[in-house]
Image (cartoon, rainbow, N blue to C red; front, side, top):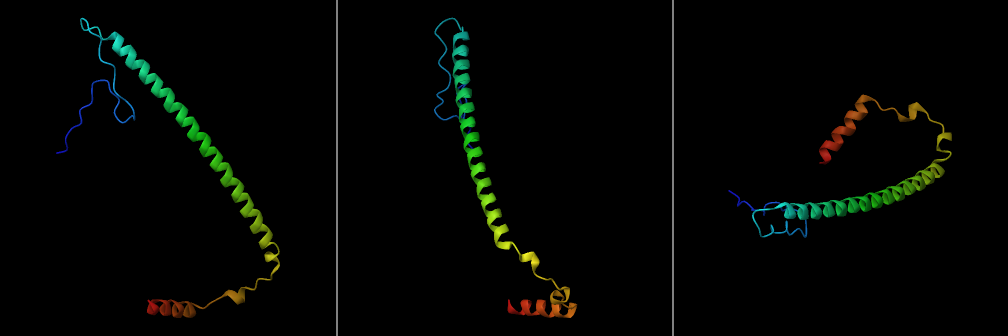
Amino acid sequence: MAAERRVQPGAVPGIPGDTGPPPPPAGKGDHSAAVLAENDLLRQRVQQLEEENQRARQALAEVEAERDDYLRAVYAYLCKELEGADDQEFKEEDYTLSAEEVLTELEKLLHEK
């Protein structure tokens, strides 16, 4: 069985740089100052994570815009290259194969492997 990792009460596991809550003040068990300090630290960490999230969203939006520009360029290029391709006459008889021809081709492919 895996060893359990003990976390100091109130500490937030998995957050880099987290040292846990400040120790409770010396006194008759009054932990309200420690709870307020921990609350303040957690609020600061939430704000940091929200800012980090906003930066990541901005970076993603920039990459998506760049991708969209690239796709527009590719589509424009393909449209230009394929312009006039529809003008070629299509004859169905040039593209028909009998079932026997298809089976023969498939057998050749199977025997090549």
